[in-house]
Length: 486
Image (tube, rainbow, N blue to C red; front, top):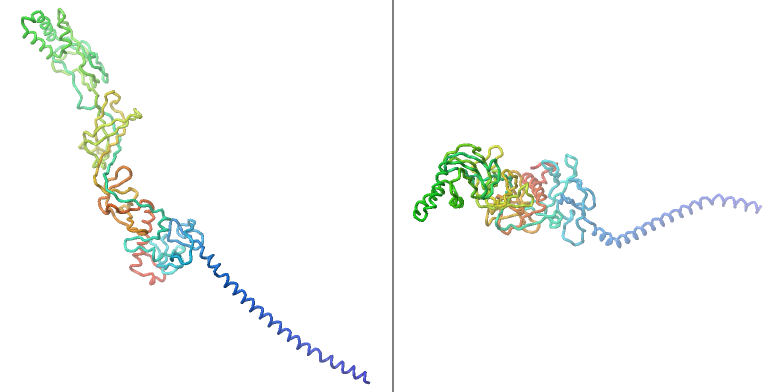
């Protein structure tokens, strides 16, 4: 029996065991959850401590981050590389961002407004977003806005835009006019060779036009009864020269009036009888321009036989356009390069300016005289004439590339101080050599003007002026949905 009771009691204990185990299992589960929570809290604190210790390094890394900008649109500044939202060009690094440096990053600068400069007129808004064309709006900062008539840009952007300056100076403006020219025979030196007695042309030695006749060469042979009689009187007077000197002098003078040279008169003095014909010789070298008689023709006293020109000097007729006429003066130096004579340079001076304008070509003849002792210059030769001279003295001069012509006016950008540029309207005079132009109004000596990068400044001036005019009538705060401005 005792054994049976023991067995019964053991069975009862076994029935109570599952409840106790269940209580112990729940207790262990609660302890396990608590341990996990405690470990999580500790781990998070460790991570926060690590992050706190690593924060300066992260900040230092961020402080070394480089800014990126567009070389064509310097107002575009980004924290990461990419493409310009305006022109699509790849952004270039600008400068590293330093801790404690002068505020120059987009995050530190205050945005004045947002716009899309690619639209015409530009689209302007007071908040970031996209324009009606779907382009990202570009921020314009307060330090980039045009103040009055002065454009203010960061000196680093000025260097990035390649801005170069030149000083306005006083000097003498010289100008060279280039023109097509042609060599001509001077009409002022044309001569008609005439006979001083009547007769017949037996022979014509200078028988064709353009022929060159040297000094002393025969020109024509003439039969003249009057001349033959005068020669006979001269020969007869030689025998009575001692008794009648006056007769000898009179006959000599008559032969000179009939066109004989002193050498010919002395030659005929030794003859016994007068020749039937007389040959006339050239007293100087010349070219035959025109033959006026033929052999065998009868001539009268004073009748021309040949028209000649010595060509010792030649004319250079330059065809100058009428707009260049104000720069031409009498006495200016002229250099001529003859197409048929390469390497040769002929120099002369302006001697004549024609009063009439050729109606078709709108040119004016400007004439210079050139020496032609060697006879190389010929009628009709083509040439290039360079007419130079001082046009203005004590003139204000600037490089030609400093002036921007808009069609209605001419603008230069004056550097008032570093990073500040004033667009100024000027009145220009004639341009000169060496790439300079005279300024009649708008500048003063010693001022510095932009000669490189001014077109970027002009574009910035126009775009920002459009934004300024818009903001003058409606502030960005009021343009909640964006607007168009001129």
